[in-house]
Image 1 (cartoon, rainbow, N blue to C red):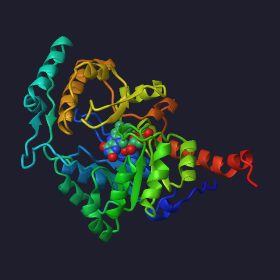
Image 2 (tube, helix red, strand yellow):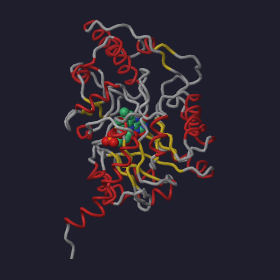
Image 3 (cartoon, rainbow, N blue to C red):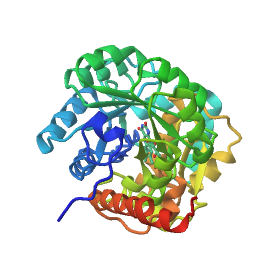
Image 4 (tube, protein in one colour):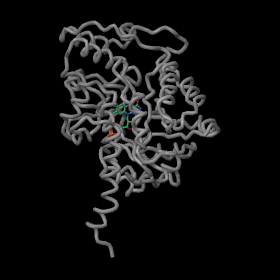
Length: 380
Ligand SMILES: Cc1cc2nc3c(=O)[nH]c(=O)nc-3n(C[C@H](O)[C@H](O)[C@H](O)COP(=O)(O)O)c2cc1C
């Protein structure tokens, strides 16, 4: 059967068939599976899009192993996404994993008191989680080095500006992408020589800015011209893809829809929450990381809101949230367990293979652009 053609400049830049990238989605500290694991990357790239590994939180060795695993499973281009925070936990130089419990005990007193109070009141079990000290977030320079040595076709920075590695990456034939939620930051990234900018609107799952996708896209496109832009935040089907192309984007960066696929790495409970969610069932909060992020709503949000505490700076808040999340999982408190997800959750009704998401998105976008729009819009 003849393959549908839907090509943009992105396809030429990356050597892919369709202008669809599955977003890098990292794991939490609690040992929950990675949101965008090797299986998802391979499935999306094999389907003609480009799969991006959620590399944040991997140890440096695990990152290298995962990249090599992807290469053995597909010859198609793929990406790796890292978080490059300005502030890292002061664990560098340490080689042993550290018990999360001992790090929690070093938090400022009001936070430790609140943590102990919640644990006592909810009769939560002690957590025995270990924090790895050699992760890509703690050692971002090492992680970047691995990506460059492995010549990862598309390097993606979900946090921070990867401008300083652009020249070296280009020398290896790599492309570099940055993600942002406002036009000012987008311009800064474009000026640092990045190849692609993802403009992620307020609707999106995970870390999110304050501007909605529809308002953000044209402003980012204008501010970074001629650097090409991908749309993110709230895209879950071919209508979102067609709209993004109509706005002037060269492709889409899609998180939540790929998280809720067979290959997507969310906990089953989180996939179920996405299936049951309406358009109003996510919350933006600093609860999980200290930065504003969107997640499916759970009673953990209410618990945090009632604490009266300001979130700790990233990544300290991650420790606090992860310790409690770990206890909720161990203590079987499903009403308190959730993860990052976007407002598009309300549209997602089935867990399907990632290939099917790519194919249906392409088919629907083609139908809109080639048939529906010319039929429904009169132009003279
Ligand atoms: C479970 C989950 C984990 C995420 N983790 C990361 C991450 O580690 N790095 C990153 O750049 N973005 C991360 N994001 C944001 C996505 O890359 C993407 O920008 C966002 O999901 C797009 O919006 P959408 O969910 O509406 O498709 C995450 C999103 C989700 C839903």
